[in-house]
Image 1 (cartoon, rainbow, N blue to C red):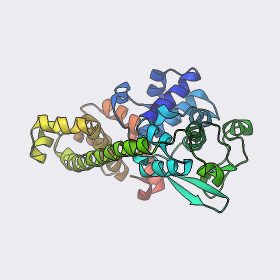
Image 2: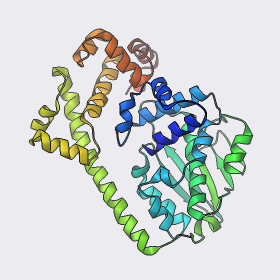
Image 3: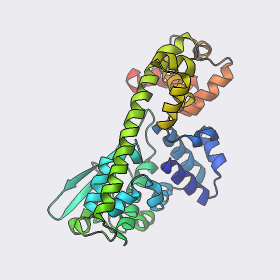
Image 4: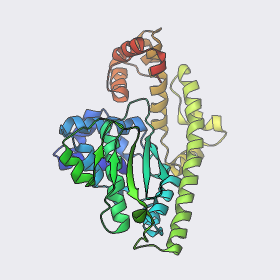
Length: 334
C-alpha cells in the first residue's frame, strides 16, 4: 500500500483529491483498508492519476518523493547495510515485501553495474508512468541510503519518452535513453561499493531477521489465499460462497479462519471479488452466454450492479470486453 499512498500523494500535490482519483479509477474508498492491492488495482490508479493530472512527468515526480516511509518494511535493513550494492541485494531478496509488480536484476561490469527492472504486470498493461516512477524511486532511495545524492552514469527505458527532457534531467541528472532493450539504471562500482554512513552489522542482522519473518508470513498468507481462490472459483457457479462455507471446506471454525486471514492480511470479500472478476472476464470473453445471465450467476441481482463491478475491474463494460476478446483472440484474455 506504500505505492498506493505514493500515487495518491503525488496526485494531491497537483490538486487531485484522493476521493476523486479513486472514483476515476473505479476503486472503492474501502479498498484503502487493505494491506495489499492486486497489481491491476494499482495499474488502474496510475492510469487514472496520469489522466487526471494531465502531467507527462507524473511518474517521475512521484518516484522522486520515494523515501524511507515508502519501504517501511525494510528501510532500516537497507540503511544498516554495509554498501549500496548489499542494500540492493536485500531489495532483491525481500522484493515481495515492497511490491508484487516487478523484480530487480543486478548485472555487474568491470567499472559499473546495471540495476535492471523487470515489471510483472497483471491482466492490464502497466502505465508507462509506473516504470518511470520505479527508476526515479531507485535513484531517490539510493540517495537516502547513502546520505548524499546519487548520480547514475545512464538511465534507460524500454518505452518511448513521455515528457520533456527537462523532467528526466531533474530526476536523474544524467543521460537518459529511450526505446532500449531494457529499463534500468547504470551506477559506478565506486558508488555501489562505498561504505554507507549508517552501516551497522548488529542492526542489519536484527532487521534482516524481521524481514525474513515478514516474508515467511506473507508466503503463508499466499498459500491460504491460493487455496481460498481455487475454492471460490469452483464454488461460484453454485451461488455466492460465504466465509462459513470456506471455513467448513478448510475444516476449521469460522472464527479461526477469520483470525488466520487477519494475521495474513487477507480479506474474504476481497478474495471473493477477485474470484468473481476472473470468472466474469473469462465467461464474458468466451461469448457463449448472455451478459445478464453471467452477472446473475455471480450473485449480481441487477445487471447495473454487474456493469459497475465490471467497469471497476477493467475500466470498460462487459460488451467492450467481449468485443476486444473477439478481435484479439483468446490469447489476450486472462
